[in-house]
Length: 281
Length: 263
Image (cartoon, rainbow over the protein chains, first blue to last red):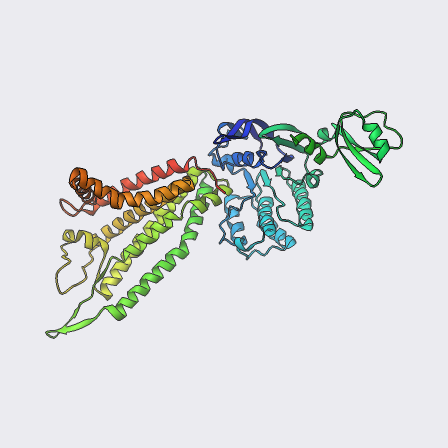
């Protein structure tokens, strides 16, 4: 089992600071949600972890070893990137073949099974795949590679609802069969909220939250009911957001709630609403 | 450096070269066939037949090909090998090793080709053209004839071609890595400035300030480095090319070691 330690990482591009003194640990056997708005620094962080770029300062350790330019450390991580890094002329089955060479734990049988499930033709050239199928192709390699740490950067890009559902189910199944560290970087917070067990939120290059999802959701609650009653109840409280449907209203509140009136219902806090509140500047 | 990754990367590079090598040699053999059909004219002179056409230096095809292969050996491989968790150092080692293997393959096939070609037409391998006096072979003696390829010539031909191809591939690899590290403006500036400087600026400045002595000295140095002055010695050329290959490989490493993946 492997873990990643990010210590005081700063990354600047000319005069832009993409990451500011980031300290975060990715412990073994967790499914992490790495969340942040566009340009928050998520992909930069993942690129630094996987050695695709170098930090301006700081250190990245994989199982206690420096990860930068370290084959042993880097080979423990597989990162499904947003970009296609595979040669365009390469066929899907050839990509599987080479992945099996680089990752000895690569499960070819499983990869082929996933291809059947997702209806991905292994004889197709990567350049001929649609955006959705390019994502599926990369997802299949990521799920099959057998690495101890698997990173998904925007994995569901271009996927339809059915394929997204299939991916999430397969991810959970895969994790149950072979517990390891998954890191999901995505904008679709609602979809992954039930999958991830730890959440890291990055805002303007800084980690503003790093906690278990359960703890985060316990930071507040959702109060629903008739609009008038909800408005009356939330007055003076810290409201993350509200949504109205007809005469019914839901309010997302921060902090512990007591003495809730009988005509209102209390539910769990919504991760996406919390995210929006935290990352709105 | 991971042995497994190195081995897989080597296999990947070599499989990537396969088609290029096959197509290139197919073109060479087609060219030879065309020469045999149309170019190798025989005429009768005093009752004996004389071949008036000569062919030589088909190894240039390998040299051009390996230069192009070198030029294509960074960007795509860097992306693919980085995606598969490989450090830049291992990537570069595997690329250089694979170019070395490809150079050896080219050198071997070209040496065998020379044996075949000298038997079916008047053919002069590049080594014999460049270092003819060493082998007692004069280029301008009529009627033209193919040199007799002794074991010494064949061995030296193989080694010389190996070093030449490797040296050329290292130049290609260095150029492509250099261009990868540059931004668009610098690429355009260097792409235009370097040829202009070398072809126009340097001769002009040399003539203006040194009366052409600098380029003459450079030519003499190149001639000496390639073993063409003071006796014809291809081993000096081999040594020079290995040294320069090492320099270009080191420069490539310096460029690649901090390269970041670009979109």
